[in-house]
Length: 82
Image 1: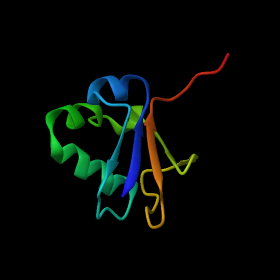
Image 2: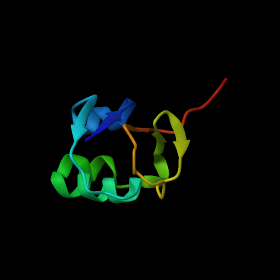
Image 3: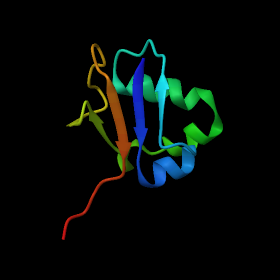
Image 4: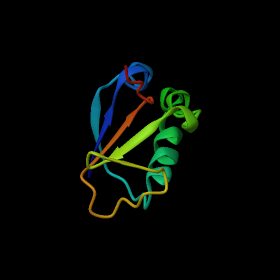
């Protein structure tokens, strides 16, 4: 089981702030594909991966990051500073 956390408009599109996902995914990209196949709301949230960032166990990673031993994956839009 992996805790999947959604922030900002990702959370709004999916409708929940977090959930536990039982997955066989080997990478973040595999996890995204599993989620997209679940329901239309996931497909909508993940339609443009270029507009998303991902953190694996609270470290910024790429979508090809492995999931072995991972406890949490978080998805969020890019942040701007000021």
